[in-house]
Length: 380
Image (cartoon, rainbow, N blue to C red; front, side, top):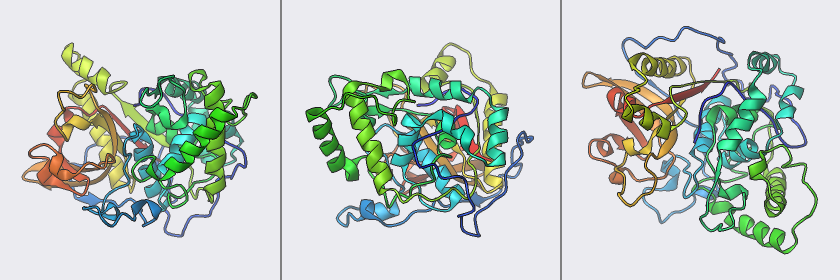
């Protein structure tokens, strides 16, 4: 779902420059470029809330627990990176950002657009990460296309899986943000499924023959005659429904990882190449640093930390990403609160975990997290 790089970038027409449109309570501080990361020695309590509003995607009154009490979830999609990134951005800008918009920009944004943004902090960030264009290409080349309902492996937007949080955050500097009420993302593609079906039918019936500028900047394996037509139509839909607002602050991601993915992390352990306590300490120190400075970091780990693997599940590693929204000391150990975006009920989680779960927000101990933890990203 993610992997190593340095930084990232860009998207569609109608650029909105970074502005001062945020509310007065927005934290406009830009954190240092290269701070000294140290653990919070006392594991002092801290908590954060991801902005969330009732909208079309949370009106199911017959479900318990109610969707309004749960975090936005990815449903049957495989784009947890977009949900974790949207949560991180939502906390930073003080408004609930649409994960589907985050995913759309990640897959199809034009990296060249980033350099046109005048914000001085962003310009310095790009200069400090001259390989960001290569990083974007790498990230997109690691995305996969599912066969589920897609035997021809066409790279339609809703059939692409995986992504990187830092890349997605940097790309989201382009075009202003779209609130989730405009492009509902609760339960994955559920609330946009009629649109997706209509676009699939129309573009199969009358596939356009020209190359669409809207998708020309993406990776070659995410291009195709039918897919281009569909994806361009999807992008047009997103731009039509999103009432974009300029970002009140630039999104400047900082990331660190000890492995390229959860599979890579597991391979390191099995082959005796454990990343070492010092490197995992650095990840946790960065989590502490972000939390102590009013940021919500995201971490890469295995979903099987929270729920036992079904022996029939072909996914051996369950690469997952979640924001960290709290820290506390309980029973003599440091615990971190992660916000899950799968939509899974607490009752289905493993023994010991379910007792610390409250509507998808789970306290995990430091020792539990260390077993699969391999990356962290936060916004300066």
